Amino acid sequence: MHPHLELSVPKGRAVNPVSGTNWEGTGVRPDVPCDAETALDRALSLAAARLA
Image 1 (cartoon, rainbow, N blue to C red):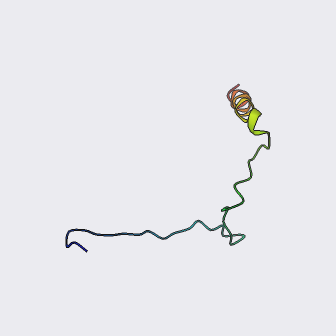
Image 2: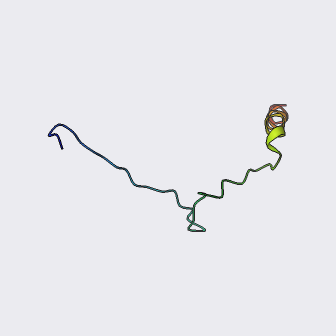
Image 3: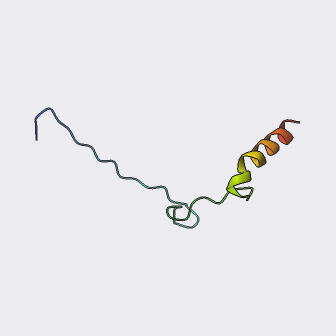
């Protein structure tokens, strides 16, 4: 290695303190389940209702 070159490799992982697992390979379950095609419209309607 060159004397002015440094390599840093971070190591970390998110772990749920309750289950002891993480969401890798399973994803995160949404608060409001809906199809991907309607997700934006659903989010906008929920935001509008919250602001009203």
